[in-house]
Amino acid sequence: DRLPALLRLMPKAELHIHIEGSLEPELIFALARRNGVALPYASVDALRSAYAFTNLQSFLDIYYAGASVLLTEQDFYDMARAYLLKAAQDNVIHTELFFDPQTHTARGVPMETVINGLHRACVDAQAEMGVSASLILCFLRHLSEEDAFETLEQALPFQDKFIGIGLDSGEVGNPPEKFARVFARCRELGFHLVAHAGEEGPPAYVWTALDVLKVERIDHGVQSSRDALLMQRLAQDRIALTVCPLSNLKLCVFPDLASHNLRQLLDAGLAATVNSDDPAYFGGYMNENFTQTFAAGPFNAEHAYRLARNSFEASFIDEAAKARHI
Ligand code: ES4
Ligand code: ZN
Picture 1 (cartoon, helix red, strand yellow):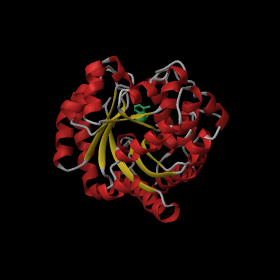
Picture 2: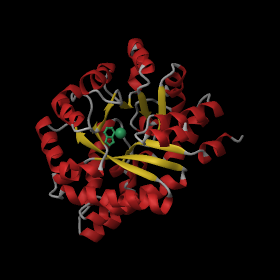
Picture 3: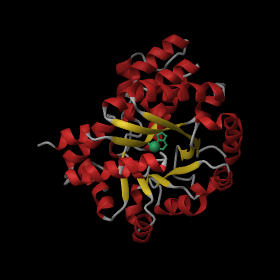
Picture 4: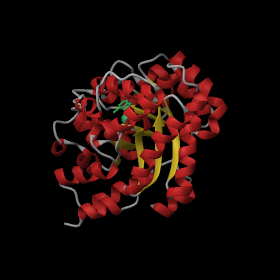
């Protein structure tokens, strides 16, 4: 069976990776020691054994605690560098990284520390690994729109260092329309727009992400299959879904990978992609997501090519580079 080799070796783009979710337990402990931060876990193994999630919120609590060890520009650089090396190993040749500045600025870490560290790692990855990498700033949806506006204000002096705006954190009860005004402003400023919708939340949140926020891609979006009209809209407008199979498995969105609806989304003509989301927490980087997903379902080489092609088509690389990849 040559499919696993194809999956590993094919060039691909990753469009849904939270850089704070790439922080491995070993690096969390190393940074805690370097920075003199106390952790509520005795060891790497004790921390890893806390990774038994029942839903999105049970994960987010541990994810935000893990990010508390990040203090200096070098910490952000080291975190992104470690991810980009893993991406290069998985033949990811382009990646768009989400970061959550509010998780850091709320602890007193300056915006410039966060952005400069991450951006320098992206620049070095191109030169040293041949991986192109861009940043997408995400607003935390459990916080207020006013807080998002303040975050945007703090980030604008560095606006040449990120290409887009996203929306993440706890979805249910925090619909996209809560951020209508700040997304309108980001659109005027010329940023690419994406939002998490339909991960745990209803199809109605996917509709408002599209029609109110006017996003170009939907992150997750797997709940869209519950709404036939929405499926038509996504197919007709070629709105990409950045699907994260191992994330959905670990957060109990689907009971097992064989029950995942990725194949159904592709069969309906949607521009679905495969991504890792929070690889340090969910048990695998890109190639692990591809190989486990394909091992569990009726997928063939044609699906592999289609997913890779979709990832470049849905990316925010310039149109000339895009034409070379698809
Ligand atoms: C996230 Cl899996 C997921 N969903 C929503 N927000 C997030 N932030 C980091 N991972
Ligand atoms: Zn995500």
